[in-house]
Length: 261
Ligand code: ADP
Ligand code: MG
Image 1 (cartoon, rainbow, N blue to C red):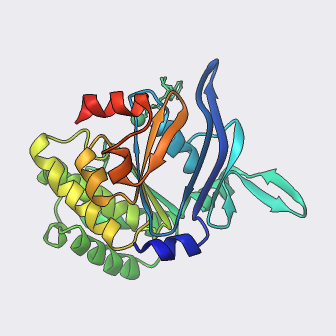
Image 2: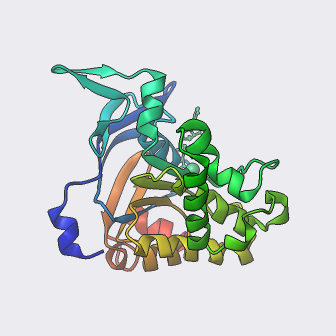
């Protein structure tokens, strides 16, 4: 993605002062983050720092307590009625979530459905697309993740890496504006991590807007436009990978990187 295009566009994601607590435990303490269209942002940080919770707030899998997140023209969890922001119904939240794809550590494909059936399940079953159109698009996606020949296989016949690539195709099947990855390679055997990261890197190069939580520093170096380091519910520092990974300014970032690299 070319820097000039990024600077001229409006952010696709605007998170402002996002707070989230579970009981007395304040997990997000005021997160501000913009993600530009076409940008790949990698979020790094120690376990428990609030990375998953932040992704889940973007996708409204968790409701934030304070602050706001805008994705495209939508205010997550709210809508403008006249001059007032109103809380959305569960149904309307589902509509908002349609523009956001998510890939989890556990890929959770439906075991009784083929690869193709897994991919068209949401577009056909939930969003009412025609089966024919959804299947044609699913085949395009399978080509993109390098698994066209596995369309009729069942998940159990695939390796973990292949299953995660199917899960990525499934997340793309609803044509999201934004795709969130939460440690997509953490559950994989080490020898299967590379193929999933390569698929994600291709998607990043094709201009998808991605927010990726991962401990894979190599991926951050090669594929991220920006690296964000989170600790203790805050963004501690952020910047281009060559700055944050090579010459971090904050002692907490340095300590973290010296542990994971
Ligand atoms: P990370 O992804 O950076 O490891 P998380 O966002 O998963 O961090 O978790 C941050 C903190 O929030 C942890 O202390 C975790 O125990 C707590 N937490 C996360 N989800 C819940 C939940 N559903 N209920 C209670 N506490 C939670
Ligand atoms: Mg997590």
